[in-house]
Amino acid sequence: MSMVNIQVKRVYEPVEAGDGFRVLVDRLWPQGESKEKAQIDLWDKDIAPTAELRQSFHSGEISWETFEGMYRQELEHNPALNAFIDLIKDKKTVTLVFAAKDTEHTHVKVILAVLAERGYGR
Image 1 (cartoon, helix red, strand yellow):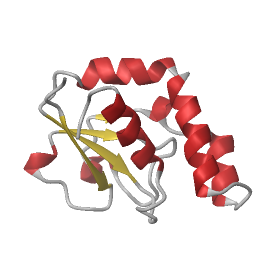
Image 2: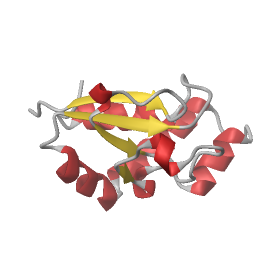
Image 3: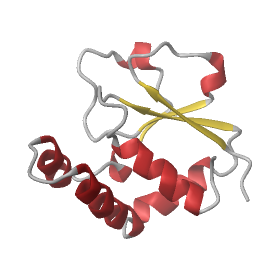
Image 4: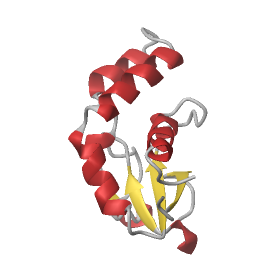
């Protein structure tokens, strides 16, 4: 079991010393946010949902539950997830950074759940 503390934060929230290793997990760079202000250590676009899946959810074509299931499948078959785990496994604190306004229905929750199932994070 890993001792990595994984937390989440919107990119628009202030950067804090306790954020540790900051990883942007969105496919697109957040509008209006400079790279200097965001202080991102890694931009891992490859573990974000595909553009097609993201657009299907945001347009209302699919429900949140459908999105969750489909994104979970994407992650399970995505080699970038294992590369991400290898990268963070020895970190003390990792903050997954995202831009979505809707913090209840965000892909970051799915990432957290998948990481927890694999023994990382909370």
